[in-house]
Amino acid sequence: MKPIALFRDAARNVPAYRHFLAERGVDPARVRSMADFSTLPIVTKENYLRAYPLAERCRGGSLDGSAAVALSSGSSGQPTIWPRTLTDELAGAARFEQIFRVFGADEHSTLAVVCFPLGNWIGGMYTAAACRQLAARGYRVTVATPGNHVEETLRVVEALGPEFDQVVLLGYPPFVKNVIDAGTARQVDWRERRIKLVLAGEVFSERWRDLVAERAGIADPVQDIAALYGTADAGVLANETPRTVRIRRRLAGDPERARKLFGDDRLPTLAQYDPAHRYFEEVDGTLLFTADGAVPLIRYEIGDTGGITPYAELAPLAGENPAAPEEPFVHVFGRSLFAVSIFGANIFPENVSEALERPEIAGWTTGRFVMRTPEDADGDRYLDITVELAPGSAGDGRAPTVAEAIRAHLIRRNSEFANYVPAARQTPAVQFRPVGDPENFPVGVKHRYSR
Image 1 (cartoon, rainbow, N blue to C red):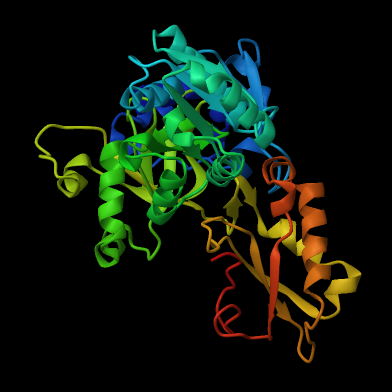
Image 2 (cartoon, one colour):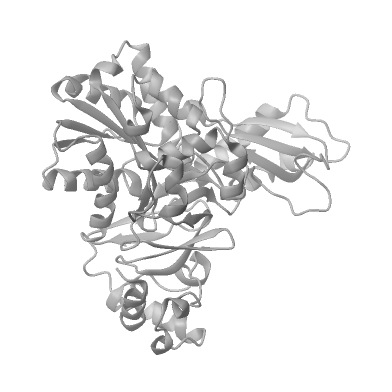
C-alpha cells in the first residue's frame, strides 16, 4: 500500500472522501509527492465519519463486499460502525504472525485462547480470525474462544492445555492477570502450561510485565509477552517485538533518557509497524495513519498521542547494528481526548460528568474531576476519580454515593465498560479535594480530566 496510490483510489472511488476533498478545495491531480500528501486535510471522526453516511465512506458508495462489521463502544458519542472485508484481516494477521513466530508456533503445537470480549466489539472476533489465518498458513495453532469470562477461560486451559506444547492467552492486560491469579488460587500449574501472552488495549509498565511473568511461570518476559497496538478503526496497527521490549526495559531504568526521547514522563507502548500496510505520521504529538480497508482512511487522526522514530535511531538501545534497515518504531501514550483505559475499556470524561450532574451530587461538587488508573500493590489497575468539592462543602461519608452513581452511569452508557470490566472492578475509588486544589484543579489553566 503506497499512500499516494491509496489516496488517488479513495478520491476516485469513495464518494464521501471525494466530497470531503471538494469541500476543502483539494484537487487530487495536484497530489504527486509525499510532500503534497502531507498537506492533505486531516480526517477525524467529527469531520468525516460523523459527517457522511456509512455507505458513502465505502468504495462505490456501497457496503457490498463487506464480510463483517464491528462497532466501537459509542462511549464518546454514537457507536461507529466499521465494515470489514476478508482482505482487511490479512494485514492484521501479519502482525500476529510476527508474534507467533517468536513464540515458536510454527514448530510447537499451540492453543490460542482468545480472552477478548466477543460480540460486536472488534477485539475477540478479529483476534480469532487472525489466529485462524495463522492456522491456514501452516502454523500449529488451535483457537479457543472463551471470551472475557474467567471461569470459561480456566476451563479451556485446564481441559485442553495438557494436549498442547504451549498456551497463548490473548486479552486485555488486567483481565489476563485476573485469569492467571484465579488459576493460581485453584492450583493451576502455569509453568507446566508454558504460557505466552498477547495483550492489547492499554499501556502497562515493565514492572507489571515482570510481575505477571513471575505469576504465570514465564521465564522470558521479553520473548513471551507481546503487546499489540490496535483499534476498532483499522484493526492491528503495530506490535511489540523482542527488540522493542528490550529497548523499553532499558528506558524504564533510565527515565531521563526516556523523557528526552518521548517528550513525556510516562513510558509509552513501543511497537514496530509495516509502512506498506499502515503509514504513520506525527503531527504536534498526535498520530495520524493511512490504511486501506472497507472504509479507506487517509491521514486519519484517531486521537492517540505518540510519535514515530526511524529504526536506526533506537536500534542501538537494543544492542543492534542499525546498518540493516528494519521496520520503524511507533510509540503510543493513548487517547489524547482525556480518556483513560481499564480492562481495554475507554472511559471518557462525558461518562463521569453526567453521573456528577445528578441532583443528589451536583449541589456540593463543581463538576470537575480527574480520572486516573493507578496500580495497586498487587499490580492491578483500578479506576480512581478525584472530585472537586464546591466551596464550603465537605465530602465526609459521601464517596460511596458518588462511586455508585459513576458505576451505574458507566454501565448504562459505556458498553465497553459494562462488558469488559469485571463486576468486582467496576466501582471506582473516589476521593475529594477542595476547590482550586493546586495538584488536581489549579486555578487559571485549562483543566485536564485525566492524568
